[in-house]
Amino acid sequence: MGDTWADLSPGLDPEPLRFLYHEPTLRRHARGALVVGLVSLGSFIGCALLRSAESNWYEPLPLHLFGTVCGFLTIVAAATVVEAYRPLAYLFRNALLTPGVVLPGEPLTIVVLASLGNGRGPEVEGLRRIVLRSPLPDRDRAPGTRIPVVSTFQRGRGLDRWVTFRSTPIAWGTGRDREIERCLERLDPTDFKRLEALVARGVVPEDEDELIILDRNAGRIERVSIREETKRYPPDRG
Image (cartoon, rainbow, N blue to C red):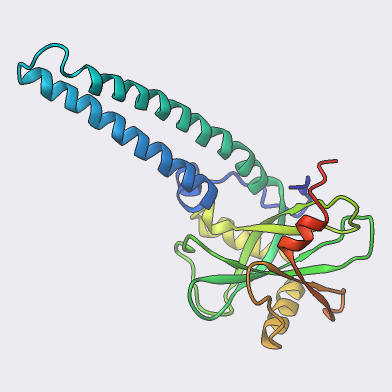
């Protein structure tokens, strides 16, 4: 992802446990660490039970060795969670606040409008559909509900705009209504109205792979495949 922090950023640190639970990447890492940790704990409990049953001294050894290996893997998995958390929390605080609205139907889905201009080409905007793999805790999920999200953007080698963007609802990082409302208030109401008008006209990506590119007047330019665009314009870290 590109270096997308801006003046219009949330400016707040996510609540660690809440962010671990709701952010999909972190949740996968945390689940892995938890499973390995539970297996390790079960192995050591099994060793203790074997010893208390007055079994031969060598009988618990394989289980003890297995538990030790799992314990080591638990430490590695926990370190992986920490390493994954740091950059995602940094981006949550410093990346770009963007408007999103809830779409009708299941699963819970939002559509997000964000500028794709990166200073190298025309000022265009992108419209992206995002299926939320985690709920919006304590928030209204009725169609049309305005959702503040934080977005990070991907560079493309040889492309004069951002290739795509990834969005995270602010509600995944904080349960404080005051902070969420503050993020909503900082977003331009005009952008929300334009986004809502696009949804009302049916200008919505058909799936998560589709990106609709718009001009500043919200006239449709083209629909592109994010997967194909990423292949055509590989990530540029520069």
